[in-house]
Image (cartoon, rainbow, N blue to C red):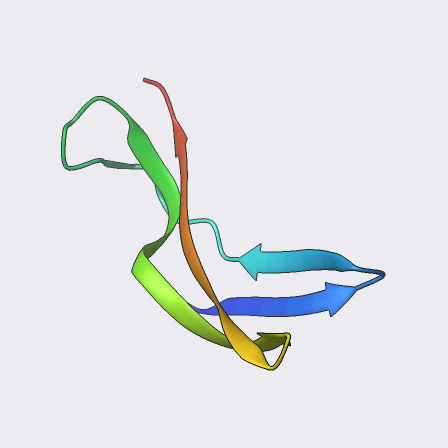
Amino acid sequence: MPMTVAIKNNKLIIEIDLEKPTPSASGKTLVVASTRGNAVTDVLVDGKPVTIGLNAYIKP
């Protein structure tokens, strides 16, 4: 899933598209946005890339 990551005013800004709610692997929640595992970004902190693992969900 496309994700935009930036640092502004010493804050990590993550922008990711919402998707149609789909059941999580456990079936306990509905996932509305996910990186589907860890994603290495182009954003650097101390010269090293930031890796993000993001799951946004709702409870049915």
